[in-house]
Length: 392
Image (cartoon, rainbow, N blue to C red; front, side, top):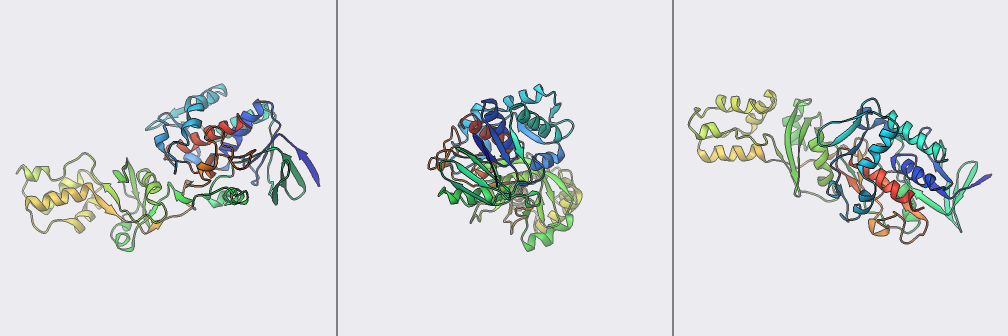
């Protein structure tokens, strides 16, 4: 069996692992990245519809979910969206801002991956693809065994991601490894994921699949005003994906509130006596704000039996606070990220190093830090990867 020795071994050639490798390599460390897939950066390539929403100009610690909301502050402050943008500009990669500070490649996510690979090459990083790990132990060094090789290093960085999108290779490896070394892992759950409606709501709304409308979703003090999409099984679209990360916690039974007509007053003209109080007039008013089929279905279910001020006020409230208690989510197959993970109390916020096991680091999605939709999870990957890479 061939044995190779390095200063740093990194498990996972995704966004966090490659950034960590670059930063460690630039400091003269001999770095090897081990990746079980046949290609690096698979999640980078499929993100943002193939254009990679690589960061967000409005990135703050408040855009992240964690059992410790302060943990991400240090890494995010020391590697900012501007730092990553300067890397793009060095490689002359064209990009543009969409909405809400989201930055995308003009051409393709391949530009981001090629840039990271070029930076790794320049920093002398070795990347071993199609490398399945059979065993891992620690003597003086960490020893990683594969089918025909053994890799040794005094520092080991776990950048293996979460459970989301198993079709591109997601596994529980990072969590299992943490537990092997006695490091606590908080129960993961699918985040940024479409919701499945309960049977009653499915029968009412899911034949409207394909209809999209701008709404405001809210739960636990969080609020998102973006598009909602009705699907064959439930609800999706950015507004739903965002709120799903807050709803889909273990044992959560709180309903989600959906404002179907943010900032509008559907029944105002009826109160001002400018319109006769009829179902047809109400339908016409609601159709001004919602797609016709959705407006009609909503009124089929919610139209008032009488036309008093009180029933109109109730209807107005319902339109702005439609309560949905989903039956569940579409799970890890459709989740963009995995929430929760390696407990942040086990790690140094400055370096990502384990407090219990010197030389062992955890970065990226495997850690209990989860970004909202819009480039924040990539920014966490760059920032946590840089923090570990500058420390190993």
